[in-house]
Length: 180
Length: 330
Image (cartoon, chains in turn red, purple):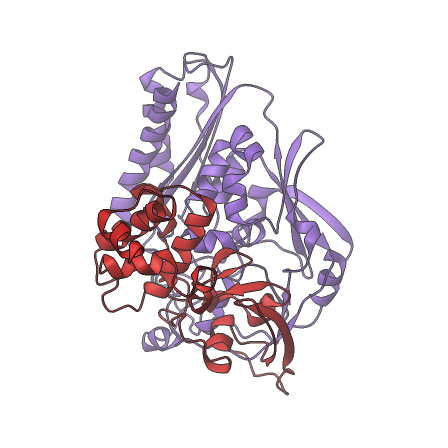
């Protein structure tokens, strides 16, 4: 049911938002998604363009701290909000978030395409539950993030381990690495 | 990469301004965007302008008023699933909201979007390329139905998880239009034509859903069958609400409401359930009788994945199991 195109293209809109703590003003097309603005206007290519229709979770970012799909968020909906992408995840942790460290130790990233989205969903879980989390909690929190490589086992191991490292009960390997 | 068609976006701050903006020819609403944006990416519509409800704060309240729990249309599905009063008063609503799609979609999708969810069909919710390869259908670019050969009415499925539950609880819907609010029973909002299955008047914006607080002890449950445990739309869905003479599963049933989704374009209210009235809910014949009525009256079509005869068998299974689980929980 494709109708005729509008006679004239709608004007660009000035988007004022915060991305990874930086105030950003950028002119965006009204029909562009937040994902398109992040990747193609701001060169923040950590958030991945997978299915582009909300099924895979590879584009997951946080908006005001809550995980959301950047591919189904109109860029103008980020006006006045705080957007965090995987590029900003480690900012409060000296550049590397304990989750990223744990993914490295557990080989939880294989091709790596789903990893940025999974990190953003997992970080939200760990901030909502500042304690060691269970595998079931991780399963539920990551239920919107597909991984076609790992079979999820190492991802679950890594998120549980990161939560334990952050709350003082990490694996021996993790303690060794943190000590170094 | 699936690109959106070009459109303008307006972001009014109030419901009145949103209603006014919606008067523009071809304008459509967007709230969470999780239903309309994939459909626009698939070129199922090409509106010149989207009216965004993202800044209309008045739609985001949950309150108790005049014997109803009132949930604003802009409340997210996550908020409904986690809300203390919703969980305490209407556990089947909280449960249904919490099993929609994925956590990410629940963080974005709203109640208003879910009750106005477009109907879905295996021949429609595909890319433009896929659809045009089979010549389209009544709901897209063509004039035939691939589900019902020679059918003249679209039978795309009403796939909302919340609508059957809210309907089983006797909820009403309030739409705000240019002439003020209009309240109607939620189940009367849906019609049999999948290309225009909701009776939203021109210029109307859904404001809230009102769920009457129960006056008797009740047991309510929602059963949803999916291929995977996450992301999927239901293959069958059954909402059951039972009124009891006292707060025990050994009490007599004084009323029962069963609403089934994912058949055609509107939810199906199961009838002829009177014979279970007066029996104890824990009497095994209650679950069997309800499941038999559900099976007799609900005939799925080949409009969503999995074969219709199998889905029909599974509706019976899920209806019976839902009541058995109510009894087991006490």
